[in-house]
Length: 189
Image 1 (cartoon, one colour):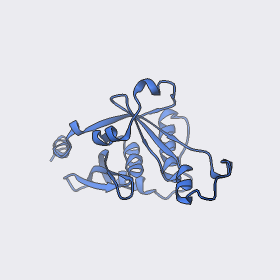
Image 2 (cartoon, one colour):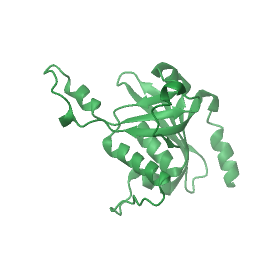
Image 3 (cartoon, one colour):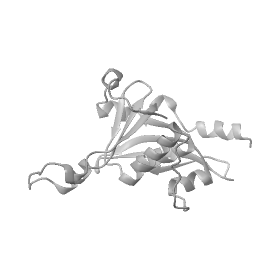
Image 4 (tube, one colour):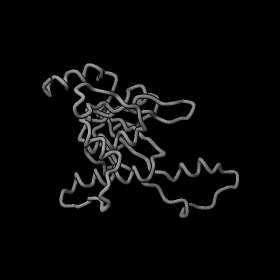
């Protein structure tokens, strides 16, 4: 099978009409807990911990904004590093550690077609993502369910497209492009 045939096969499983493409993205890093004002003793520590985790904001092809909070700081930093290295090619953000991260290992072993944020697990109030990829020497596409921030990192490293389910965008209460014009500082995907 030639590469074109593989691309055609992998697209059979992707209904583009159900998704919006991510056009721009930016990681936001909130203030650390130590710089926040004192809170009530009644504040739930889990909620407080999540308030200090990074957020990913994604500008979609229709101009809406989709936000995901509670991003692991190490993943948010890796996402920022990938985006910064694309923006400024002179910037050397190569890791000093010669070991591969999981996101780097995946793109070494497979052709990543796309990442999709597909669903939310209501019981846990967390998003679910899938990455469509073709493992080296495998010849047919597979889909892996994973944590969305990890899927986004893999897609960014691989130069693959990122999509968000239209149902999630409608239920998320996204802002329109007019609200976002003043926010700036987004990276192209």
